[in-house]
Length: 60
Image (cartoon, rainbow, N blue to C red; front, top):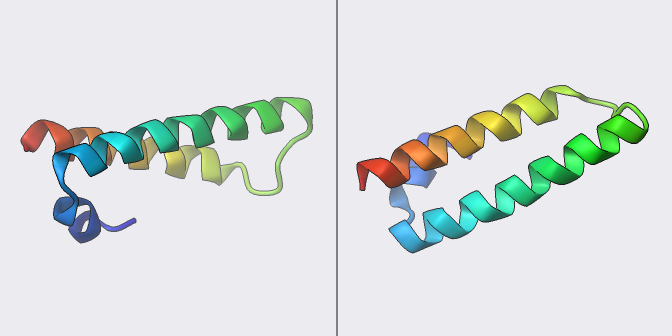
């Protein structure tokens, strides 16, 4: 998700997206702990997306 897409979201949509991404990150971490996932960089990308969403929410 690009920053322009994040900025176009409303505050409630951003909060919902943060919750969804946190759930996704939890699933990725769990899957990676059981058997290494194919692309572990997805965990890093997910964490960065959550940080971008939190920053955008704070700015609003």
